[in-house]
Amino acid sequence: MKSTFAKAALVAILSAAALSVAPSSFAGSKTATFQVSLTVQADCSISANPLDFGSTGVIDSNLDQASSLVVTCTKGTPYTVALDAGSAAGSTIADRELANAGGTAQVKYNLYRDVGRTQVWGQTTGTDVVGGTGNGNAQPIPVYGRVPAQSMPAADTYTSTVTATVAF
Image 1 (cartoon, helix red, strand yellow):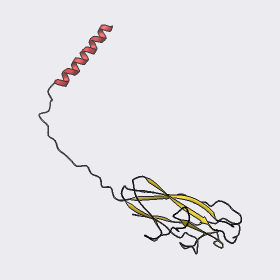
Image 2: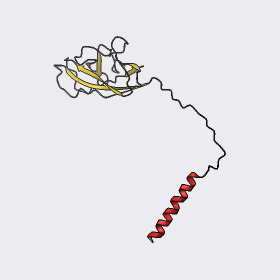
Image 3: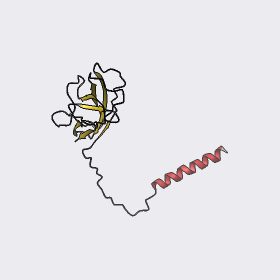
């Protein structure tokens, strides 16, 4: 049995070897080249994480909180990130407002570019935006928020929707 198996294996090996040295059945061959290309354009995407000041009673001292935006730009692409005043009526870059659902009461707050909360984040290029250069990876950008001490609003939930824009 072993002898029959060994003979069959030897025949298979010799047949494969003979085929590999057999002349090709083609008369010849020609080649052609072709170009493969891709154009990568300057591009960016942006996403945002919520900024939640939590729950409080009397606002007799600053409430500080932080969040982040995430910018992903093609490598070498310069960009700036601007924040608008928010959706609450009466909001400006200098004096942002959170409003209750009916819009009848507001709480003052602001967004900053620095941890010391001295540089308000706005939407004027060259003045109050954050800039960077894309590296092809997601780049987190911190957003610092502050609700300053202020007169007490009515107990309620106060919100605003801020739009972050990446320009490149």
